[in-house]
Image 1: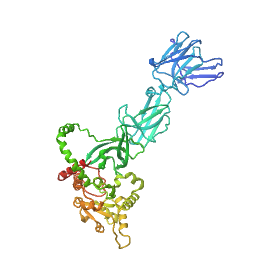
Image 2 (image 1 turned 135 degrees about the horizontal axis):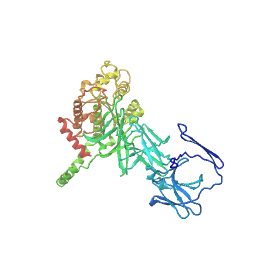
Image 3 (image 1 turned 180 degrees about the vertical axis):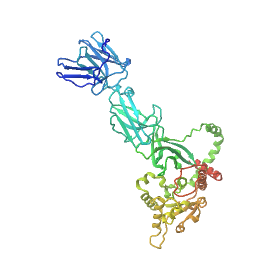
Image 4 (image 1 turned 30 degrees about the vertical axis):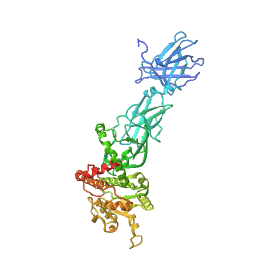
Length: 591
Protein backbone atom coordinates (compact mmCIF):
# COMPACT_ATOMS: atom_id res chain seq x y z
CA UNK A 1 0.00 0.00 0.00
CA UNK A 2 2.88 2.34 0.67
CA UNK A 3 3.94 2.04 -2.99
CA UNK A 4 0.55 3.20 -4.28
CA UNK A 5 -1.81 1.39 -6.63
CA UNK A 6 -0.47 -2.06 -7.54
CA UNK A 7 -3.47 -3.40 -9.42
CA UNK A 8 -5.97 -2.39 -12.03
CA UNK A 9 -9.48 -3.77 -12.55
CA UNK A 10 -10.81 -3.97 -16.12
CA UNK A 11 -14.45 -4.79 -16.79
CA UNK A 12 -16.09 -5.56 -20.13
CA UNK A 13 -17.53 -2.46 -21.77
CA UNK A 14 -21.20 -1.52 -21.74
CA UNK A 15 -22.92 1.48 -23.31
CA UNK A 16 -23.70 4.50 -21.11
CA UNK A 17 -25.48 7.66 -22.21
CA UNK A 18 -25.08 11.23 -20.99
CA UNK A 19 -26.87 11.94 -17.72
CA UNK A 20 -26.93 8.31 -16.55
CA UNK A 21 -25.54 7.23 -13.18
CA UNK A 22 -23.10 4.35 -13.12
CA UNK A 23 -22.61 2.36 -9.91
CA UNK A 24 -19.48 0.27 -9.34
CA UNK A 25 -19.45 -2.24 -6.46
CA UNK A 26 -16.58 -4.52 -5.58
CA UNK A 27 -15.94 -6.97 -2.76
CA UNK A 28 -13.55 -9.82 -2.22
CA UNK A 29 -13.94 -13.40 -1.08
CA UNK A 30 -13.39 -13.80 1.81
CA UNK A 31 -15.01 -10.56 2.92
CA UNK A 32 -13.08 -7.70 4.49
CA UNK A 33 -9.96 -7.73 2.32
CA UNK A 34 -11.22 -5.01 -0.01
CA UNK A 35 -14.53 -3.24 -0.54
CA UNK A 36 -15.47 -0.56 -3.05
CA UNK A 37 -18.74 1.27 -3.76
CA UNK A 38 -18.61 4.29 -6.02
CA UNK A 39 -21.00 6.04 -8.36
CA UNK A 40 -20.50 8.35 -11.32
CA UNK A 41 -22.82 10.57 -13.31
CA UNK A 42 -21.99 10.57 -17.00
CA UNK A 43 -21.38 14.11 -18.16
CA UNK A 44 -23.32 15.53 -21.10
CA UNK A 45 -20.92 18.36 -21.90
CA UNK A 46 -18.07 16.33 -23.33
CA UNK A 47 -16.88 15.95 -26.93
CA UNK A 48 -14.71 13.27 -28.51
CA UNK A 49 -11.17 14.19 -29.60
CA UNK A 50 -10.34 14.65 -33.28
CA UNK A 51 -7.12 13.34 -34.83
CA UNK A 52 -5.44 12.42 -38.13
CA UNK A 53 -3.45 9.28 -38.96
CA UNK A 54 -0.98 8.10 -41.59
CA UNK A 55 -0.37 4.42 -42.39
CA UNK A 56 3.28 3.51 -42.89
CA UNK A 57 3.26 -0.11 -44.25
CA UNK A 58 7.05 -0.28 -44.70
CA UNK A 59 7.58 0.46 -41.00
CA UNK A 60 4.46 -1.52 -39.92
CA UNK A 61 3.30 1.47 -37.92
CA UNK A 62 0.58 4.15 -37.81
CA UNK A 63 1.43 7.79 -37.13
CA UNK A 64 -1.20 9.86 -35.24
CA UNK A 65 -1.26 13.67 -35.06
CA UNK A 66 -3.61 16.55 -34.01
CA UNK A 67 -4.08 20.01 -35.46
CA UNK A 68 -5.55 22.35 -32.85
CA UNK A 69 -7.04 20.26 -30.03
CA UNK A 70 -5.61 19.75 -26.52
CA UNK A 71 -3.20 16.91 -25.92
CA UNK A 72 -4.71 13.44 -26.31
CA UNK A 73 -3.70 9.87 -25.49
CA UNK A 74 -3.81 7.27 -28.28
CA UNK A 75 -3.38 3.51 -28.51
CA UNK A 76 -3.95 0.62 -30.98
CA UNK A 77 -6.48 -2.08 -30.16
CA UNK A 78 -8.50 -4.95 -31.71
CA UNK A 79 -12.22 -4.24 -31.97
CA UNK A 80 -14.39 -7.10 -30.75
CA UNK A 81 -18.17 -6.96 -30.22
CA UNK A 82 -18.17 -3.99 -27.78
CA UNK A 83 -14.71 -3.85 -26.30
CA UNK A 84 -11.56 -2.77 -28.09
CA UNK A 85 -9.00 -5.23 -26.74
CA UNK A 86 -5.45 -4.09 -26.18
CA UNK A 87 -2.60 -5.51 -28.25
CA UNK A 88 -0.22 -7.91 -26.62
CA UNK A 89 3.25 -6.84 -25.48
CA UNK A 90 5.41 -5.19 -26.71
CA UNK A 91 2.80 -3.54 -28.98
CA UNK A 92 0.50 -2.55 -26.10
CA UNK A 93 1.46 1.06 -25.51
CA UNK A 94 -0.24 4.38 -25.00
CA UNK A 95 1.32 7.57 -26.37
CA UNK A 96 0.57 11.25 -25.82
CA UNK A 97 -0.02 13.38 -28.90
CA UNK A 98 0.23 17.18 -29.11
CA UNK A 99 0.22 19.73 -31.90
CA UNK A 100 4.00 19.74 -32.02
CA UNK A 101 4.63 16.05 -31.31
CA UNK A 102 2.88 13.24 -33.25
CA UNK A 103 3.04 9.62 -32.06
CA UNK A 104 4.07 6.55 -34.04
CA UNK A 105 2.31 3.33 -32.95
CA UNK A 106 3.81 0.02 -34.19
CA UNK A 107 1.59 -3.00 -34.84
CA UNK A 108 2.37 -6.71 -35.11
CA UNK A 109 -0.25 -7.83 -37.65
CA UNK A 110 -2.30 -5.91 -40.19
CA UNK A 111 -5.88 -6.96 -39.38
CA UNK A 112 -9.33 -5.64 -40.38
CA UNK A 113 -10.20 -5.18 -36.68
CA UNK A 114 -7.07 -3.09 -35.93
CA UNK A 115 -8.30 0.30 -34.65
CA UNK A 116 -6.92 3.62 -33.31
CA UNK A 117 -8.50 4.79 -30.06
CA UNK A 118 -7.99 8.36 -28.72
CA UNK A 119 -9.14 10.05 -25.49
CA UNK A 120 -8.51 13.27 -23.60
CA UNK A 121 -6.20 13.08 -20.61
CA UNK A 122 -8.82 14.12 -18.03
CA UNK A 123 -10.79 11.47 -16.16
CA UNK A 124 -13.85 9.87 -17.80
CA UNK A 125 -13.27 11.58 -21.12
CA UNK A 126 -15.14 10.35 -24.17
CA UNK A 127 -13.16 8.19 -26.57
CA UNK A 128 -12.97 8.38 -30.35
CA UNK A 129 -12.22 5.21 -32.32
CA UNK A 130 -11.33 4.76 -36.00
CA UNK A 131 -10.80 1.36 -37.72
CA UNK A 132 -9.03 2.29 -40.99
CA UNK A 133 -8.43 -1.24 -42.34
CA UNK A 134 -11.96 -2.63 -42.16
CA UNK A 135 -12.45 -2.16 -45.92
CA UNK A 136 -8.83 -2.57 -46.98
CA UNK A 137 -8.05 -5.74 -48.99
CA UNK A 138 -4.50 -5.82 -47.56
CA UNK A 139 -5.94 -6.58 -44.12
CA UNK A 140 -7.49 -9.88 -45.31
CA UNK A 141 -4.23 -11.51 -46.30
CA UNK A 142 -1.76 -13.82 -44.51
CA UNK A 143 -1.72 -11.74 -41.30
CA UNK A 144 -5.42 -12.41 -40.73
CA UNK A 145 -5.02 -16.21 -40.90
CA UNK A 146 -1.77 -16.26 -38.92
CA UNK A 147 -3.63 -14.51 -36.10
CA UNK A 148 -6.23 -17.32 -36.02
CA UNK A 149 -5.80 -20.53 -33.99
CA UNK A 150 -7.20 -23.72 -35.54
CA UNK A 151 -8.07 -26.72 -33.39
CA UNK A 152 -8.63 -30.04 -35.16
CA UNK A 153 -11.02 -32.67 -33.73
CA UNK A 154 -11.30 -34.93 -36.78
CA UNK A 155 -11.90 -38.65 -36.22
CA UNK A 156 -11.23 -41.46 -38.67
CA UNK A 157 -13.41 -43.93 -36.72
CA UNK A 158 -16.42 -41.58 -36.89
CA UNK A 159 -15.69 -40.54 -40.51
CA UNK A 160 -16.00 -36.97 -39.28
CA UNK A 161 -13.93 -33.83 -39.85
CA UNK A 162 -14.22 -31.09 -37.23
CA UNK A 163 -12.30 -27.81 -37.00
CA UNK A 164 -12.79 -24.91 -34.60
CA UNK A 165 -11.14 -21.50 -34.85
CA UNK A 166 -10.38 -18.65 -32.49
CA UNK A 167 -8.83 -15.42 -33.73
CA UNK A 168 -7.96 -11.91 -32.65
CA UNK A 169 -10.64 -10.62 -35.02
CA UNK A 170 -14.20 -12.02 -35.02
CA UNK A 171 -14.52 -14.17 -38.17
CA UNK A 172 -17.51 -15.86 -39.76
CA UNK A 173 -16.05 -17.42 -42.92
CA UNK A 174 -17.61 -19.77 -45.43
CA UNK A 175 -16.11 -23.24 -44.97
CA UNK A 176 -15.89 -26.02 -47.56
CA UNK A 177 -13.67 -29.01 -48.36
CA UNK A 178 -10.95 -29.29 -50.97
CA UNK A 179 -8.41 -31.93 -52.05
CA UNK A 180 -4.78 -30.84 -51.90
CA UNK A 181 -2.64 -32.47 -54.56
CA UNK A 182 0.45 -32.68 -52.34
CA UNK A 183 1.81 -31.60 -48.96
CA UNK A 184 3.74 -28.70 -50.49
CA UNK A 185 2.46 -25.30 -49.25
CA UNK A 186 2.13 -23.99 -52.81
CA UNK A 187 0.12 -27.02 -54.03
CA UNK A 188 -3.35 -26.29 -55.37
CA UNK A 189 -6.45 -27.50 -53.54
CA UNK A 190 -9.30 -28.73 -55.76
CA UNK A 191 -12.76 -27.84 -54.43
CA UNK A 192 -15.10 -30.69 -53.40
CA UNK A 193 -18.54 -29.92 -54.91
CA UNK A 194 -21.49 -29.20 -52.57
CA UNK A 195 -19.38 -29.36 -49.40
CA UNK A 196 -20.08 -25.95 -47.81
CA UNK A 197 -21.30 -25.99 -44.19
CA UNK A 198 -22.34 -23.36 -41.64
CA UNK A 199 -20.51 -23.23 -38.34
CA UNK A 200 -21.88 -23.04 -34.83
CA UNK A 201 -19.82 -21.22 -32.17
CA UNK A 202 -16.88 -21.07 -34.56
CA UNK A 203 -16.93 -24.87 -34.99
CA UNK A 204 -17.36 -26.51 -38.39
CA UNK A 205 -18.37 -30.17 -38.78
CA UNK A 206 -18.40 -32.43 -41.85
CA UNK A 207 -19.94 -35.91 -41.51
CA UNK A 208 -19.45 -39.04 -43.65
CA UNK A 209 -16.04 -37.94 -44.85
CA UNK A 210 -12.96 -39.85 -45.93
CA UNK A 211 -10.66 -38.33 -43.29
CA UNK A 212 -7.36 -37.93 -45.09
CA UNK A 213 -4.33 -35.61 -44.67
CA UNK A 214 -4.91 -34.24 -48.18
CA UNK A 215 -8.62 -33.54 -47.65
CA UNK A 216 -8.56 -30.05 -46.15
CA UNK A 217 -10.77 -27.22 -44.89
CA UNK A 218 -11.07 -24.13 -47.08
CA UNK A 219 -11.95 -20.95 -45.14
CA UNK A 220 -13.18 -18.11 -47.37
CA UNK A 221 -13.68 -14.62 -45.94
CA UNK A 222 -14.32 -11.46 -47.97
CA UNK A 223 -11.93 -11.80 -50.92
CA UNK A 224 -9.35 -14.03 -49.26
CA UNK A 225 -9.16 -17.72 -48.40
CA UNK A 226 -7.06 -20.07 -46.28
CA UNK A 227 -6.43 -23.83 -46.47
CA UNK A 228 -6.12 -25.77 -43.23
CA UNK A 229 -5.51 -29.53 -43.36
CA UNK A 230 -6.19 -32.07 -40.58
CA UNK A 231 -3.45 -32.25 -37.95
CA UNK A 232 -1.63 -35.51 -37.16
CA UNK A 233 -3.90 -37.70 -39.28
CA UNK A 234 -2.43 -40.92 -40.69
CA UNK A 235 -4.19 -42.20 -43.83
CA UNK A 236 -6.71 -44.93 -43.02
CA UNK A 237 -6.09 -46.54 -46.41
CA UNK A 238 -3.55 -46.49 -49.20
CA UNK A 239 -3.38 -47.83 -52.72
CA UNK A 240 -0.56 -49.03 -54.95
CA UNK A 241 -0.56 -49.28 -58.72
CA UNK A 242 1.06 -52.01 -60.80
CA UNK A 243 0.73 -53.85 -64.09
CA UNK A 244 0.23 -57.61 -63.81
CA UNK A 245 -0.63 -59.92 -66.64
CA UNK A 246 -1.47 -57.13 -69.09
CA UNK A 247 -3.92 -55.50 -66.70
CA UNK A 248 -3.81 -52.61 -64.32
CA UNK A 249 -3.94 -53.78 -60.69
CA UNK A 250 -4.92 -51.51 -57.82
CA UNK A 251 -4.03 -52.96 -54.42
CA UNK A 252 -5.84 -51.35 -51.48
CA UNK A 253 -4.79 -51.68 -47.86
CA UNK A 254 -7.52 -50.38 -45.57
CA UNK A 255 -8.18 -50.38 -41.85
CA UNK A 256 -11.78 -49.19 -42.25
CA UNK A 257 -14.42 -51.95 -41.85
CA UNK A 258 -16.95 -51.99 -44.68
CA UNK A 259 -15.12 -49.44 -46.83
CA UNK A 260 -15.49 -49.48 -50.63
CA UNK A 261 -13.24 -47.91 -53.25
CA UNK A 262 -13.80 -46.82 -56.85
CA UNK A 263 -11.59 -46.05 -59.80
CA UNK A 264 -12.06 -44.68 -63.30
CA UNK A 265 -9.98 -43.67 -66.29
CA UNK A 266 -8.73 -40.10 -66.29
CA UNK A 267 -7.91 -38.26 -69.52
CA UNK A 268 -5.70 -35.16 -69.43
CA UNK A 269 -7.37 -32.02 -70.78
CA UNK A 270 -4.59 -29.67 -69.68
CA UNK A 271 -1.46 -29.83 -67.47
CA UNK A 272 -3.65 -29.12 -64.41
CA UNK A 273 -6.94 -30.80 -65.35
CA UNK A 274 -7.69 -34.51 -65.68
CA UNK A 275 -11.29 -35.44 -66.45
CA UNK A 276 -12.93 -38.65 -65.24
CA UNK A 277 -14.33 -40.96 -67.93
CA UNK A 278 -16.91 -43.72 -67.32
CA UNK A 279 -17.27 -46.53 -66.51
CA UNK A 280 -16.49 -46.52 -62.80
CA UNK A 281 -15.05 -49.71 -61.26
CA UNK A 282 -15.77 -50.45 -57.59
CA UNK A 283 -14.52 -52.96 -55.01
CA UNK A 284 -15.79 -53.35 -51.45
CA UNK A 285 -15.10 -55.35 -48.30
CA UNK A 286 -17.59 -58.23 -47.88
CA UNK A 287 -20.23 -57.55 -45.26
CA UNK A 288 -19.36 -58.71 -41.77
CA UNK A 289 -15.62 -58.73 -42.35
CA UNK A 290 -13.15 -56.34 -40.77
CA UNK A 291 -10.51 -54.28 -42.56
CA UNK A 292 -7.98 -55.90 -44.85
CA UNK A 293 -6.58 -55.87 -48.39
CA UNK A 294 -8.54 -55.55 -51.63
CA UNK A 295 -7.59 -55.82 -55.29
CA UNK A 296 -9.28 -54.10 -58.21
CA UNK A 297 -8.48 -55.17 -61.77
CA UNK A 298 -9.03 -52.69 -64.60
CA UNK A 299 -9.20 -53.66 -68.28
CA UNK A 300 -6.34 -53.32 -70.72
CA UNK A 301 -7.34 -50.00 -72.30
CA UNK A 302 -6.65 -48.24 -69.00
CA UNK A 303 -2.94 -48.94 -69.44
CA UNK A 304 -2.73 -45.98 -71.79
CA UNK A 305 -4.19 -43.53 -69.25
CA UNK A 306 -4.00 -42.35 -65.67
CA UNK A 307 -6.67 -43.37 -63.17
CA UNK A 308 -8.52 -41.59 -60.38
CA UNK A 309 -9.04 -43.52 -57.15
CA UNK A 310 -11.33 -42.56 -54.27
CA UNK A 311 -13.30 -43.96 -51.33
CA UNK A 312 -16.90 -44.35 -52.47
CA UNK A 313 -18.88 -45.28 -49.32
CA UNK A 314 -18.86 -41.70 -47.93
CA UNK A 315 -20.35 -38.38 -49.10
CA UNK A 316 -17.11 -36.40 -49.30
CA UNK A 317 -13.83 -37.83 -50.58
CA UNK A 318 -10.87 -36.62 -52.59
CA UNK A 319 -9.77 -38.32 -55.81
CA UNK A 320 -6.16 -39.47 -55.95
CA UNK A 321 -4.46 -39.40 -59.34
CA UNK A 322 -2.28 -42.42 -60.17
CA UNK A 323 -0.22 -42.83 -63.33
CA UNK A 324 2.15 -45.55 -64.44
CA UNK A 325 5.84 -44.64 -64.23
CA UNK A 326 7.23 -45.08 -67.71
CA UNK A 327 10.44 -43.16 -67.11
CA UNK A 328 12.71 -46.19 -66.80
CA UNK A 329 15.99 -44.35 -67.13
CA UNK A 330 18.09 -47.47 -66.88
CA UNK A 331 16.32 -48.90 -69.88
CA UNK A 332 16.78 -45.65 -71.76
CA UNK A 333 20.54 -46.13 -72.16
CA UNK A 334 20.02 -49.69 -73.38
CA UNK A 335 17.35 -48.59 -75.85
CA UNK A 336 19.62 -45.86 -77.16
CA UNK A 337 22.36 -48.38 -77.89
CA UNK A 338 19.99 -50.80 -79.66
CA UNK A 339 17.93 -48.32 -81.64
CA UNK A 340 20.30 -48.21 -84.61
CA UNK A 341 20.51 -51.98 -84.82
CA UNK A 342 16.73 -52.41 -84.58
CA UNK A 343 15.83 -49.70 -87.07
CA UNK A 344 16.01 -51.96 -90.10
CA UNK A 345 14.15 -54.77 -88.31
CA UNK A 346 11.43 -52.38 -87.15
CA UNK A 347 10.69 -51.24 -90.70
CA UNK A 348 10.14 -54.85 -91.78
CA UNK A 349 8.01 -55.69 -88.75
CA UNK A 350 5.68 -52.72 -89.12
CA UNK A 351 4.14 -54.06 -92.29
CA UNK A 352 3.84 -57.58 -90.89
CA UNK A 353 2.35 -56.32 -87.59
CA UNK A 354 -0.30 -54.23 -89.30
CA UNK A 355 -1.43 -57.14 -91.42
CA UNK A 356 -1.60 -59.48 -88.43
CA UNK A 357 -3.47 -56.95 -86.31
CA UNK A 358 -6.02 -56.45 -89.07
CA UNK A 359 -6.46 -60.22 -89.39
CA UNK A 360 -6.77 -60.87 -85.63
CA UNK A 361 -9.08 -57.96 -84.78
CA UNK A 362 -12.68 -58.28 -85.92
CA UNK A 363 -14.66 -55.27 -87.10
CA UNK A 364 -16.28 -53.48 -84.21
CA UNK A 365 -19.20 -52.58 -86.50
CA UNK A 366 -20.33 -56.20 -86.45
CA UNK A 367 -19.42 -56.93 -82.80
CA UNK A 368 -22.17 -58.31 -80.62
CA UNK A 369 -22.49 -57.82 -76.84
CA UNK A 370 -21.69 -60.62 -74.40
CA UNK A 371 -23.41 -60.89 -71.02
CA UNK A 372 -21.05 -62.77 -68.67
CA UNK A 373 -22.71 -64.78 -65.88
CA UNK A 374 -20.76 -66.50 -63.09
CA UNK A 375 -21.08 -67.75 -59.51
CA UNK A 376 -19.33 -65.94 -56.66
CA UNK A 377 -17.01 -68.78 -55.63
CA UNK A 378 -14.27 -66.61 -54.12
CA UNK A 379 -12.42 -63.35 -54.51
CA UNK A 380 -9.81 -65.20 -56.60
CA UNK A 381 -12.54 -66.50 -58.88
CA UNK A 382 -13.86 -62.96 -59.36
CA UNK A 383 -10.36 -61.91 -60.44
CA UNK A 384 -10.43 -64.72 -63.00
CA UNK A 385 -13.83 -63.53 -64.28
CA UNK A 386 -12.64 -59.91 -64.58
CA UNK A 387 -9.44 -60.92 -66.33
CA UNK A 388 -11.21 -63.26 -68.76
CA UNK A 389 -13.81 -60.57 -69.56
CA UNK A 390 -11.03 -58.07 -70.24
CA UNK A 391 -9.29 -60.55 -72.57
CA UNK A 392 -12.52 -61.16 -74.51
CA UNK A 393 -13.14 -57.46 -74.90
CA UNK A 394 -9.56 -56.80 -76.02
CA UNK A 395 -9.40 -59.77 -78.39
CA UNK A 396 -12.88 -59.68 -79.96
CA UNK A 397 -13.47 -55.92 -79.83
CA UNK A 398 -16.99 -56.41 -78.47
CA UNK A 399 -18.72 -55.03 -75.37
CA UNK A 400 -18.67 -57.41 -72.38
CA UNK A 401 -21.43 -56.79 -69.82
CA UNK A 402 -20.18 -57.65 -66.33
CA UNK A 403 -21.75 -56.63 -63.00
CA UNK A 404 -18.28 -56.21 -61.41
CA UNK A 405 -17.62 -53.36 -63.84
CA UNK A 406 -20.95 -51.60 -63.20
CA UNK A 407 -21.32 -51.79 -59.41
CA UNK A 408 -22.60 -48.22 -59.16
CA UNK A 409 -25.41 -48.92 -61.62
CA UNK A 410 -26.12 -52.29 -59.98
CA UNK A 411 -26.30 -50.57 -56.60
CA UNK A 412 -28.88 -48.09 -57.88
CA UNK A 413 -31.06 -50.54 -59.83
CA UNK A 414 -30.57 -53.78 -57.91
CA UNK A 415 -29.11 -57.00 -59.30
CA UNK A 416 -32.41 -58.37 -60.66
CA UNK A 417 -33.42 -55.27 -62.71
CA UNK A 418 -29.85 -54.91 -63.94
CA UNK A 419 -29.68 -58.57 -64.99
CA UNK A 420 -32.99 -58.49 -66.92
CA UNK A 421 -32.14 -55.13 -68.55
CA UNK A 422 -28.81 -56.50 -69.83
CA UNK A 423 -30.49 -59.71 -71.01
CA UNK A 424 -33.00 -57.68 -73.02
CA UNK A 425 -30.18 -55.61 -74.51
CA UNK A 426 -28.25 -58.74 -75.54
CA UNK A 427 -31.34 -60.21 -77.19
CA UNK A 428 -32.08 -56.99 -79.05
CA UNK A 429 -28.48 -56.75 -80.37
CA UNK A 430 -28.34 -60.48 -81.23
CA UNK A 431 -25.61 -61.09 -78.70
CA UNK A 432 -24.84 -64.05 -76.44
CA UNK A 433 -25.20 -64.90 -72.75
CA UNK A 434 -21.96 -66.64 -71.68
CA UNK A 435 -22.39 -68.77 -68.54
CA UNK A 436 -18.90 -69.30 -67.09
CA UNK A 437 -19.31 -72.55 -65.15
CA UNK A 438 -17.13 -73.66 -62.22
CA UNK A 439 -17.17 -76.19 -59.42
CA UNK A 440 -18.81 -73.56 -57.24
CA UNK A 441 -21.53 -73.07 -59.85
CA UNK A 442 -22.61 -76.68 -59.34
CA UNK A 443 -23.22 -76.14 -55.66
CA UNK A 444 -24.86 -72.75 -56.29
CA UNK A 445 -27.20 -74.45 -58.78
CA UNK A 446 -28.13 -77.03 -56.15
CA UNK A 447 -28.82 -74.33 -53.58
CA UNK A 448 -30.94 -72.46 -56.12
CA UNK A 449 -33.01 -75.61 -56.74
CA UNK A 450 -33.22 -76.32 -53.02
CA UNK A 451 -31.46 -79.70 -53.36
CA UNK A 452 -28.34 -78.92 -51.31
CA UNK A 453 -28.09 -80.50 -47.88
CA UNK A 454 -28.73 -78.24 -44.93
CA UNK A 455 -25.61 -77.27 -43.05
CA UNK A 456 -23.30 -78.23 -45.91
CA UNK A 457 -22.13 -74.66 -46.34
CA UNK A 458 -23.19 -71.05 -46.20
CA UNK A 459 -26.38 -70.18 -48.08
CA UNK A 460 -26.01 -67.62 -50.89
CA UNK A 461 -27.99 -64.43 -51.18
CA UNK A 462 -31.58 -65.10 -52.35
CA UNK A 463 -31.34 -62.49 -55.13
CA UNK A 464 -27.79 -62.79 -56.45
CA UNK A 465 -26.59 -62.68 -60.06
CA UNK A 466 -26.37 -66.46 -60.47
CA UNK A 467 -29.85 -67.09 -59.08
CA UNK A 468 -31.35 -64.34 -61.25
CA UNK A 469 -29.65 -65.81 -64.32
CA UNK A 470 -30.95 -69.33 -63.59
CA UNK A 471 -34.49 -68.03 -63.18
CA UNK A 472 -34.19 -66.10 -66.45
CA UNK A 473 -32.74 -69.15 -68.25
CA UNK A 474 -35.47 -71.44 -66.98
CA UNK A 475 -38.15 -69.04 -68.15
CA UNK A 476 -36.62 -68.81 -71.61
CA UNK A 477 -35.98 -72.52 -72.14
CA UNK A 478 -39.42 -73.74 -71.22
CA UNK A 479 -42.15 -71.54 -72.66
CA UNK A 480 -44.69 -74.29 -72.19
CA UNK A 481 -44.43 -77.50 -70.14
CA UNK A 482 -42.43 -80.13 -71.98
CA UNK A 483 -41.32 -77.82 -74.78
CA UNK A 484 -37.73 -76.67 -75.04
CA UNK A 485 -36.91 -73.92 -77.55
CA UNK A 486 -33.57 -72.73 -78.95
CA UNK A 487 -31.76 -70.12 -76.89
CA UNK A 488 -28.75 -67.84 -77.26
CA UNK A 489 -27.18 -69.12 -74.04
CA UNK A 490 -23.80 -70.86 -74.09
CA UNK A 491 -21.74 -72.52 -71.33
CA UNK A 492 -17.96 -72.37 -71.00
CA UNK A 493 -15.73 -73.88 -68.31
CA UNK A 494 -12.01 -73.98 -67.60
CA UNK A 495 -10.71 -77.54 -67.65
CA UNK A 496 -8.40 -76.86 -64.69
CA UNK A 497 -11.34 -75.66 -62.58
CA UNK A 498 -14.06 -78.24 -63.26
CA UNK A 499 -15.19 -80.94 -65.69
CA UNK A 500 -18.08 -81.47 -68.07
CA UNK A 501 -19.80 -83.69 -65.52
CA UNK A 502 -20.06 -80.75 -63.12
CA UNK A 503 -22.63 -79.18 -65.46
CA UNK A 504 -26.15 -80.25 -64.37
CA UNK A 505 -27.93 -82.73 -66.62
CA UNK A 506 -30.76 -80.25 -67.18
CA UNK A 507 -28.38 -77.83 -68.88
CA UNK A 508 -26.28 -80.21 -70.95
CA UNK A 509 -28.30 -79.64 -74.13
CA UNK A 510 -26.85 -76.09 -74.23
CA UNK A 511 -23.63 -75.57 -76.24
CA UNK A 512 -20.67 -76.32 -73.96
CA UNK A 513 -17.04 -75.37 -74.53
CA UNK A 514 -13.97 -76.52 -72.66
CA UNK A 515 -11.35 -73.81 -72.20
CA UNK A 516 -8.80 -73.21 -73.49
CA UNK A 517 -8.97 -76.27 -75.78
CA UNK A 518 -12.26 -75.32 -77.50
CA UNK A 519 -11.74 -71.57 -77.43
CA UNK A 520 -11.88 -71.13 -81.26
CA UNK A 521 -15.32 -72.71 -81.34
CA UNK A 522 -16.50 -70.46 -78.51
CA UNK A 523 -15.27 -67.37 -80.39
CA UNK A 524 -17.18 -68.39 -83.52
CA UNK A 525 -20.37 -68.77 -81.48
CA UNK A 526 -19.90 -65.46 -79.67
CA UNK A 527 -19.05 -63.36 -82.72
CA UNK A 528 -20.28 -65.33 -85.72
CA UNK A 529 -18.82 -68.01 -88.04
CA UNK A 530 -16.58 -65.50 -89.87
CA UNK A 531 -14.71 -64.47 -86.70
CA UNK A 532 -11.20 -65.70 -85.93
CA UNK A 533 -9.45 -66.36 -82.63
CA UNK A 534 -6.34 -64.24 -81.98
CA UNK A 535 -3.35 -66.51 -81.61
CA UNK A 536 -2.50 -65.18 -78.15
CA UNK A 537 -5.99 -65.53 -76.62
CA UNK A 538 -5.77 -69.27 -75.90
CA UNK A 539 -2.41 -68.95 -74.12
CA UNK A 540 -3.69 -65.99 -72.12
CA UNK A 541 -6.83 -67.78 -70.93
CA UNK A 542 -4.82 -70.84 -69.89
CA UNK A 543 -2.33 -68.67 -67.99
CA UNK A 544 -5.17 -66.95 -66.15
CA UNK A 545 -6.37 -70.20 -64.62
CA UNK A 546 -2.82 -71.28 -63.89
CA UNK A 547 -2.19 -68.06 -62.02
CA UNK A 548 -5.40 -68.45 -60.03
CA UNK A 549 -4.54 -71.99 -58.95
CA UNK A 550 -1.11 -70.88 -57.77
CA UNK A 551 -2.68 -68.01 -55.81
CA UNK A 552 -5.00 -70.45 -54.04
CA UNK A 553 -2.16 -72.85 -53.23
CA UNK A 554 -0.04 -69.99 -51.94
CA UNK A 555 -2.80 -68.84 -49.59
CA UNK A 556 -3.71 -72.37 -48.52
CA UNK A 557 -7.28 -71.94 -49.81
CA UNK A 558 -9.74 -74.59 -50.92
CA UNK A 559 -12.19 -73.89 -53.72
CA UNK A 560 -15.50 -73.44 -51.90
CA UNK A 561 -18.46 -71.37 -53.08
CA UNK A 562 -19.46 -68.16 -51.28
CA UNK A 563 -16.36 -68.11 -49.08
CA UNK A 564 -15.37 -64.43 -48.43
CA UNK A 565 -11.59 -64.82 -48.69
CA UNK A 566 -9.05 -62.05 -48.49
CA UNK A 567 -7.54 -61.49 -51.91
CA UNK A 568 -4.12 -62.95 -52.71
CA UNK A 569 -2.06 -62.47 -55.82
CA UNK A 570 0.76 -64.36 -57.49
CA UNK A 571 2.65 -64.70 -60.73
CA UNK A 572 1.71 -67.29 -63.38
CA UNK A 573 3.10 -70.73 -62.58
CA UNK A 574 6.11 -72.08 -64.45
CA UNK A 575 4.22 -74.33 -66.88
CA UNK A 576 2.35 -71.34 -68.25
CA UNK A 577 5.10 -68.71 -68.10
CA UNK A 578 6.17 -69.08 -71.74
CA UNK A 579 2.61 -68.80 -73.03
CA UNK A 580 2.00 -65.82 -70.76
CA UNK A 581 5.10 -64.11 -72.11
CA UNK A 582 3.91 -64.66 -75.69
CA UNK A 583 0.51 -63.19 -74.84
CA UNK A 584 2.11 -60.19 -73.19
CA UNK A 585 4.39 -59.65 -76.19
CA UNK A 586 1.50 -59.69 -78.63
CA UNK A 587 -0.67 -57.35 -76.56
CA UNK A 588 2.23 -54.94 -76.09
CA UNK A 589 2.87 -54.78 -79.83
CA UNK A 590 -0.84 -54.30 -80.51
CA UNK A 591 -0.98 -51.43 -78.03
